[in-house]
Image 1 (tube, helix red, strand yellow):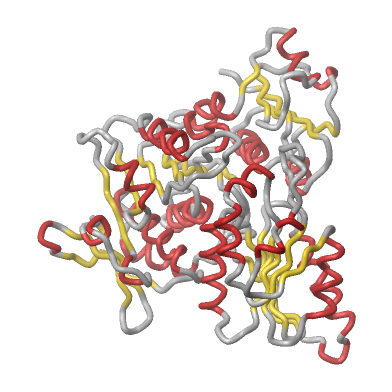
Image 2 (cartoon, one colour):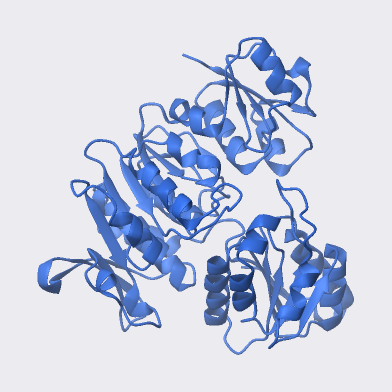
Length: 475
């Protein structure tokens, strides 16, 4: 069996997680990246041979090379490996080697997949099943984003970008929602939706699908599936400020609120006959996280985990890195980081902030992520970011893309109802906030890029400038 692998672009979230799992499985792992990162430092401690920069000399004594989606065809290491006859693969091709004979539980969806994956991995861990897992960010409960367990299950976040999830063959497939994203890969909503159908077509024999009935895009996919595939739908419509449709009312599972502040999950049969399956108190805020919790609970129930174990795990769940990540309260100013970079995610995160911090002035600091996504969904972005009380917009984080000439400054005139400030640099954003924040304010930084540094800087400057009120409450 292949047990010597080299990763090109190993410093990213996806490949670094795969590398960690393989190290724990006993593989010999090496990798290269253009610059260092926290992920690389963790891999270095695990004994991974790392190279900063790309070179033909890095391709030695390996059986297979795996490249990041961001690595071009003319990369020197790609070219060298091909010249030596060494297979060069992307994640989509290599994932079956990572999962092996373990039972795959794959969580897909435009939004919520990281948190739902983290919840399921935590529940299985609390049940004593020691699952393997790959999560899109560090789980606060598990202390890592990847692990090779001794158990039979492999829980993995099924990323649709660059069709990665088509390399998975799940026994349980969860679909949290389907809403057009990654226009650089999927130019139309129809192409995007078809990718999810292709993913679900990889379901194992006797496998099952768990799908959210609250999202029209997910239900559109559901109705295109073969009738012989088991599909279980769930809804939290009673907790949402909208009139439920028939798909929601007829869902197989419903999450309802109880008078004591807890939530109860019911299975629902014909004629709306309901049976309570379990109850729990939410460990993280937001309606979207209750949808995630419902998906995780149903997944665990189908795997035979006791309801009490599921309830306790959900109540103790504290979230994932950069998912409504409360850094703390610094002299009366609350700083929160979130990875939200799609209009629907921004809506849910602002809603969660309003629920958690009512009657506080809410500052939203938004770093648009990629030119293609920002320009394609601009009208929806404007609608959602306008729900803040104060708005700061930084320049677009290009990520893997080249500039189109578009600037975030062009968004400011479209914001009509609230004060909005364009910050050409992150330092400009920090300075503006330092000069305008007041005690009682909540700062919500929305970024899938490097704007995470804003709150890190603010946490220090606020304390430095207010020595007489040096109280910090960290969550």
